[in-house]
Each structure stands twice: as C-alpha cells, then as structure tokens.
Length: 368
Image (tube, rainbow, N blue to C red; front, top):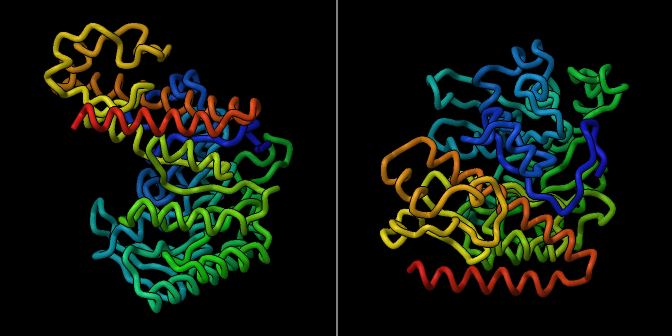
C-alpha cells in the first residue's frame, strides 16, 4: 500500500496515538520498533489542541514529528462512547466535551474538514457505531444513518481533498478515504452495508462496530461474513482489535490493517505479551526473576532489563514502568505482524496461527 508519506506493507498492525502520541513511547522509538503507520484520534485532537492550530503548524505529521503515514478515525466511536453526553440526528451528533462540558456538533462534513486539516494519509468516513446488544430496529436505523453519512463524507471529501496542509510539499498527493461497514450482529445488514459502500467506491473499507462488548465468537462470525464481500484489491481494515492470537488469526482470514490500544493499555496495567504468552509482571513470582520479559525478544527492553526490575518499577509506581512495558508490547505486536507477512511468503501462516494460539492458551492457564 503506497501512501503519500511512504509505503506500508500489509497485513499491518497500527499502534494507536490517540492525542498525537503513542502513550508513553516517543516517536523515534516507535519508528525504531518498525511501525510504518500509526493512528490518531480526530475527536481528541479536535478538542485539544484543535485542528485549526494543527493545520497552521503544518499538519499532524509535522506537529508531532512523525514522517511516516498516519490514519485518523472519524470521531464516531468516541462520540458513541459519550452516550450520556450526545444527541444524534440525521444531520450529525451534538455532544458535550468530556474535558470541560462545552457543546460541539459533528456532521460528516465537519469530520472531513477536521481530518483534512489534520492531514493524515488515510481518513475515515463519519459513522455511527452500533452498540451491543442492539435490536434489529436499532441496528437498521444506525445503518441507515451510517450509509447516508458515508455518502456525505465522500462528497465533501472529494470537493476539499486538495486542502490538506502538505498537499504542495508532497507533489500534490492527496489523502484516501475509507468507508466503514456497520450493521451490528445482523448478517443481512452487514451485507447491505458492504454492498452500498462498494457502490460508492471508497479507497478502502473498514469493518467497524466490533469490540463493543460482544462475545469473541460473534466478532469472528461478523468478520467471516463481511471480508469476502469486500474488494480484495483494496485495503480491508478491521477496527479496534485485538489480542495477539486474534490479530494473527484475522490476518490469516484476509484482514490487511488492524489497530488496537491493547498493547499500551495492557502495559500500563502490568500485562506483557511474549512468545511464551501473557506475563502479569505484577506477580510476586517475578520478584527475583533475572530473565528478560521475553527470552525470544530482541527489543531494547528485553536486551537490558529483567522481569525482576520491571516488576519493581511497577510495584513502585515509577513512570518508567509504563514506558518500558509499552515499548516491549509494541515491539512484540509489530514483530508478530512481521512474522505473519514472512509466513505468508513461505506459505506457513496456518502453523504460525496454531503456535500463537497454543502459547496464549498455555500462558492463560499458568497465570490463572
């Protein structure tokens, strides 16, 4: 996948940089770990420091000193999460800021304006994320909104895509806009969503509305239903997932792009992902363990620090605990996805999926 700020090999895992930063990890280290694309959050950046400020400073790439590709979400999921602070109409969503209670309005057009000002390589159409569980009537209404908003997003994007802050500096290259498949847990609604979005002809397609509380088998069922409907010659993006064994399995199913806050969020709570499965570094049994977090990992954390030291930092409430844990978890996820790409070349992806799944199950039993 060739984007204005460089190539991205797929399948790819995208670290989440909500407020123009991957939490606790400086940009130069994210680069060193091998991340070729990260995700920024439209809702949070709109509220603070503001998209117009970022535009005046040359766009999000320049503002956060990230030279590689960026993707911004539409803000729809964050607005969805403000269930007590929002009112949805056909025109858009009126909501109150979680920061100061001020009132704001997001429409498809406004979401496009904010994302164009931020200047990410990939933008997402404004959608409504359907909650779980949702009645069929509720999912139907939500889908109708999302489809109408998708067309409005696309129309506005086409009219303004040359206003991106870096347009002239990168030889007139423009952003790409992806549509988002919704429809709750209903197979026929998901099919309708995919077919209607394909008719609109987006540059790529995302599967949204998952990881919102549904059981994991339901997540997999939706992915299995939707993926074959989406064009294989355009990026297929699964939003907001997941654990290592899940991202490997989804990549094997044909997903091209994934993102999740899990590597850094889990790190801040003392959970490490390793080739031996999950390690709860808070556990007393690691107090005198001089081995690295992952004996098979060559990241800068595993080369230098022991489990005993990582446990000490966490128990002491030291900020460095979140930094080192996050660096390791990101390294693990990014290396795992590199292994997936290599396994695809060798034709050995099914074996990798089985191995990762087995290690995860074994570690869950050990840590229980």
